[in-house]
Image 1 (cartoon, rainbow, N blue to C red):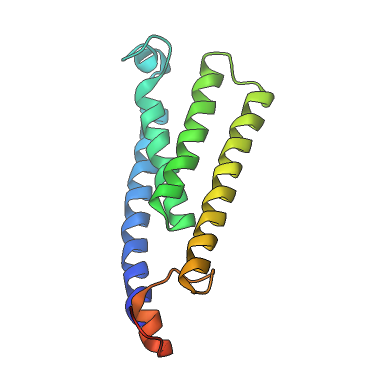
Image 2: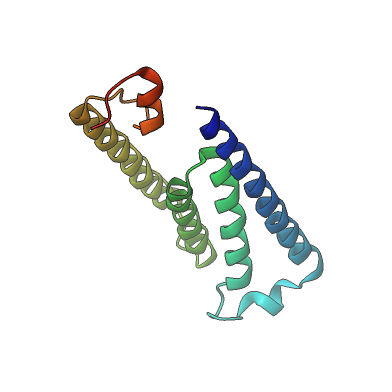
Length: 142
């Protein structure tokens, strides 16, 4: 248990470092760069460099909040898709609600499948099924 806590704290520190660095880069771009210079950088009218920076900033922030890179990536992609739709004039509240619904459905599916797998293995659905936890509780490791 102590190893898990130390590992999470170590990872959390690096996440804060990268998130701070990324948000400082975003602030610097907002402060110093004219939007017209990055508007047509890769795709016409997409503001791609700023989109990539914001995507990174949101990813690192959600990684800190969720402590899960996969979950943070899904939510970051959903938000980025909605922001790009807004840039191109297609991002209506209905589109935002549909993207939110897809993300929430995916979260529910992931939670249910994780609970089902842990139920099949005979573990507590709330635990991650780490072998060290079973050793501490005195369960047999198969």
